[in-house]
Amino acid sequence: MDWDNLRFFLELSRSGTLVAAARRLGVDHTTVARRIQALEKETGTPLFAREAGGHRLTEAGRRLQPQVEAMERAFRTVEKSTAPPVDEGLAGLVRIGATEGFGTVVLAPALAGFARLHPRLVIDLLAMPRLVHLSRREADIVISLERPARGPVIATRLTDYELHLYASKTYLRTHGPIRRREDLKGHSFISYVDDLLFSKELQYLDELYRPDAFALRSTSVLAQHQAARAGAGVAVLPAFLAARDATLQRLLPQEACFTRTFWMSMPAEARQLSRMQAVWEFLRRVVQERQALLTGRAGG
Image 1 (cartoon, rainbow, N blue to C red):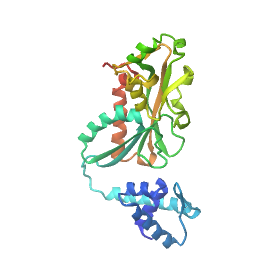
Image 2: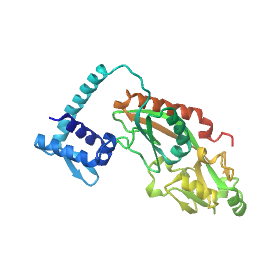
Image 3: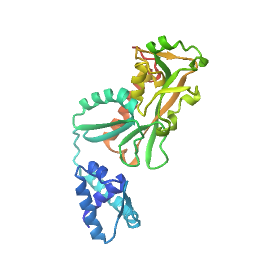
């Protein structure tokens, strides 16, 4: 039985789609499909059920998977024992999934510097207004608002961060000051689209005030920030995004402070990879060094 075909089988079983498996293997998705067809011809039975959302293991595929994983572990053991002791620095691909605002404002500038130090390392940053799934192999390291469900993953509490209530100074000049919670009555708000929330941790306003009206709702926190700058209304925004914005004014500092947590996770099987260890530790240092930014206490 061709080991290469088994290797393609294993990657498709983990990623769930031809495109994702092809990306991880560095080939075209048609190559993955061809390899799987060849393996199924060898075994004489379908190993995957083709569905609209991707490929799901059949019963035969589920029986085969642990055997191929054992072969993979044995191959890696032999590979390590025979590899020459050379150190060529970090190399390869590490894909990081993070929430849109945190990935854009906090991680991107730091990762740019890290990439310059390691020219043979490729960093993919998925800064998206949705959950990036570690279980679907969408990323190697995921930073999320909720602790990952139990499974073969390494997870750590990365950092807490704060969100505050803001409005533009021009908005407040035309709509009146907000000095206490009761003053929020009659004001327009900027927020998320309720039925498209990707995490319950994004439900802030329920803790403070039920808005009378929304001026704008968006799945993007960056869009909410820009709408607040433009004077559309009042918004709850991360301090790392809004605290240093001179066009915005923080409101109700004693009452409107929300704390949330970022969790960082990666597959347990990847913990031994030097590039994963290096990026993991770098991300931990980044948030430790930026605590003032994450809580809104950083200077301008």
